[in-house]
Amino acid sequence: MLHFFYSLFFRIALPFVLLRLWWIGRSNPEAFVRWQERLGYVEASDEPVIWVHAVSVGETIAAAPLVKALMRRNPDIPVLMTAMTPTGSARAKALFGDRVRYAFSPYDTPGAVRRFVDRVRPRALVIMETEIWPNMIALSKQRHVPIFLINARLSARSARGYERVASLVRPLLQSISWIAAQAEEDAGRFLRIGATPESVSVTGSIKFDVEISEEIRSASLKLRQQLGTERPVWIAASTHEGEDRQILEAHQQVMAQYPDALLMIVPRHPERFDDVADLAGSMGLALLRRSGTGDALVGGVEQCQIYLGDTMGELLMLYGACDIAFVGGSLIERGGHNPLEPAAWGMPVLSGPNIFNFETIYSRLDAGKGLYITPCSDALAQCVMHLIADRAAAETAGRNALAVVEANRGALEKVVDGIVERV
Image (cartoon, rainbow, N blue to C red; front, top):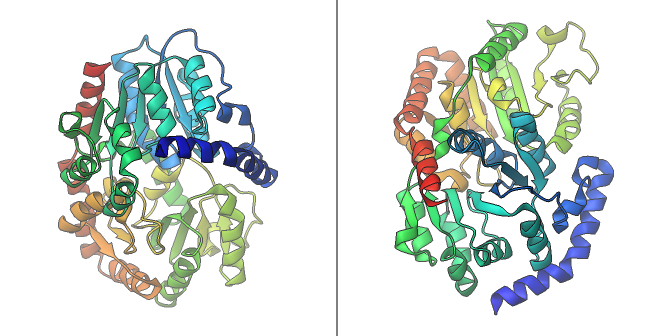
């Protein structure tokens, strides 16, 4: 019954959802292009595909090694990647070019999902993280499509929410062929909200299998030489509205003690690039944009205090040009973002206290002494200054963070093996 009312509500809301999409598209045209795909009107497939769904850019990046591995194992089976956001779709294209197909994921109405499934003819559906869409799962199950929930995580907060609609969630979870959970805690929560024991395994997080290519290392070194090898450089990555000012205020405190210090700030969403640039300007901070579209500063990079990472798909490279990394989405009630990319560079990782989306990963970094939790702007500034002043402490924390990454590798192979066995 709840499934019926869910679908009815989504049908009623759909015109307003499309109107909002059009409105967003006025300032961000990429949001409205190919809008028909969101209703299931996609190009038909000549043969069945492996459908990999990653809702946004973070999940798309996490899915990339998995997609590459599946393509190596099954080179004759085409891959279709879907995302809900333009940034996720753009990142997939940047990663794979014409080696895979791309589409926006259909909105979760019965009609849109049915049209989509009829056209793409999925041989398997691979869902990243915890995207439990009732009609996507139910209609795929009806077509006898094996469904995999990969790198699955479930916070205590989300589990409590799902328990309130158990009659809707339980049959969906029991339709999933395999849930590859990141940790025992995640597996236990999936079981508690209705998954069957035989469908749940603990594989670890494939995000630990991050690889930094020589090409990226070379680009990072070149950028650091341009920024200045002697000055302290720290990065605030994947920042959200509500924490940018806190970070910029922290940097002002850092500059009071280290006048040549440079902050690289990388907003999570591209539509906020200009807002962050304007905010820095209003605070009297000299800013340079990586895109080169902003006004050139007198003295160029040497005189800039803020380096705005306003490009897409370069975050892993940008991390490598810095000494200390703060991972955003954590000074506000957002739940944090993936800290493993800076950890893989062997640098100390800083975060705010709101990290419930990645609690297992952060707890391992904390236990391994590669993490600093900074609950506010002042604490962030003090921590950055401590690590600048005590280079030995920074190097130790960086080694510890890298050791955590190395100790937890191997999930990717387990996940690929599990999918291949069941397809």
